Image (cartoon, rainbow, N blue to C red; front, side, top):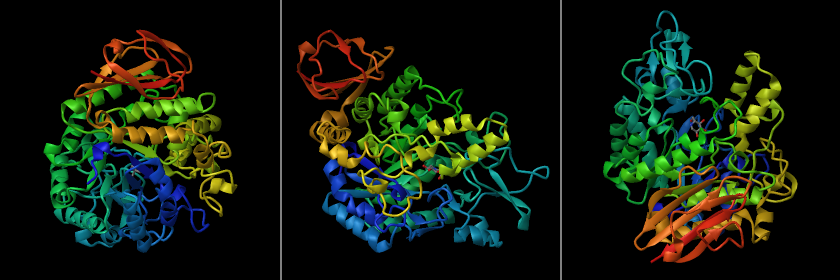
Amino acid sequence: MKDFKKSVIYQIYPKSFKDSNGDGIGDLKGVIEKLPYLKQLGIDYIWLTPFYVSPQKDNGYDVADYYRIDEKFGTMADFEELVREGRKLDIEIMLDMVFNHTSTEHSWFKRAMAGEEKYKNYYIIAEPKNGGEPTNWLSKFGGSAWEYIKECNEYYLHLFDVTQADLNWKNKELRQEIFEIVKFWIGKGVKGFRLDVINLVAKPDDYKNDDRGDGRRFYTDGPNIHDYLKEFNRETFGKQADVITVGEMSSTSIENCIRYSAPQEQELSMVFSFHHLKVDYKGGDKWSVMDFDFKQLIQILNLWQVEMQEGNGWNALFWCNHDQPRIVSRFGDDEKYHNKSAKMLATVMHMMRGTPYIYQGEEVGMTNPYFDKIELHRDIESINYYEIAKQQGQNKQQIMRVLQSKSRDNSRTPMQWDTSANAGFTTGTPWISLSENYPNINVEANLRDRNSIYYYYQQLIQLRKDYDIIAYGKYKPLVADHEKIFAYMREYKNQKLLVINNFYGQETKFQCPIDIDEYNHKILISNYADSASYSKEIVIRPYEAVVYHLEK
Ligand code: NOJ
């Protein structure tokens, strides 16, 4: 059985990974074709974002049928083949489950709208207040979170798009339906589940206006959430010792994340949290352009590392996913120090306490595409933002600048395999444009170059297998107030790891509080071939990352 603490998980956004049939949309056969590539990288699980039947308003996070695969992505036979072929290579499959909402195309929703009481109780439906929306809550994709239903003079709740109707977890019958879906996929050989915005499913008993915000404080980590997760665990994945789970936790707290992920609570294996990716939100607003706040980033990472450890919780470690801009364009330098900064950022994540996730293309240093026209965008959130900002009178160029920095489409451009047409992603017309830099940044070029970002990731993954300290060591912050350096230690038995990272393109001096000459020491990994053997004060070069292994 795999140990998730020793594992690395690779996220695939199937739509943009590899198209096997030339329709411009990636598919399951494409994933099967690339299994040997993933094996060579060394990963243990593939997390596949939703491929179920869906109108694709939110790229599959609007599920219309949880039991069937959308034909754009392939067939159930393809999926079964993927599970089988993956297993031969010791790669297991983690599925993405979206249970906060369904598509309004789901038969449950249609039957609810047709007036069937049973299905109305599957959703969150409320009466008008003063002739309007039940509350002032806002959708995370812009506008009100309530949509009027003419037929019954009521509103349904949608925390996301108007085509994503929130489910009513208070209803036991609905929860049972959800558990059946998960059991069905466990039956197909799935060994992991990523639970989409799972900390938003527990809504309060009464719906009140939020005089301090958009409503999120009423439903984030909401009432009964821990009871729901315990029940979910007991009735489904908890029965299978080898099924792992990761909850996507929106705007959550450490206290709750400890409860979600500490083994004795029997809820989930680990959690994604996002506070470290809000350090470039001006005044808390995602739709802004700002250099990241380094000190704040370090403070948040240290806090989550230390407190989750104290509470026996477990973090999912990540910089990138399908909702986030590319990290090398964000906290690194995607031009002058492309190779060095991508490796430094990888070192930071992979050496912390938690399970690392790699998002497709991150391992070859894919960047933001810098789209300069709204027509190039496909993401509903980005398009909504554009329309709202335009209506508010904002300048189009400024809106595009914000999208270049923050749009979710930044990570959704097709995987860059090689220098051929469309980077080898498709022989057809890709559903979304590629980044123009694919002739330089691609898998083929990475595989040819021993100094590539790809081989560095491969080495990081292998180190986790070879050194227990990476998976099990205690985390200790070091020098939290340096202007450029993020350094920390790990400790395990008679060993220590000393991890030093320069987040900037200038060299800087660093004085380490540990005297490493007191130990047997060696460099485990570094992004400079000739990293200095340590002396008390060292000069750390632009974007240098170095990990020392110390032993008594
Ligand atoms: C989080 C997913 O990662 C995102 O892509 C999606 O839009 C929302 N949840 C709604 O399902």
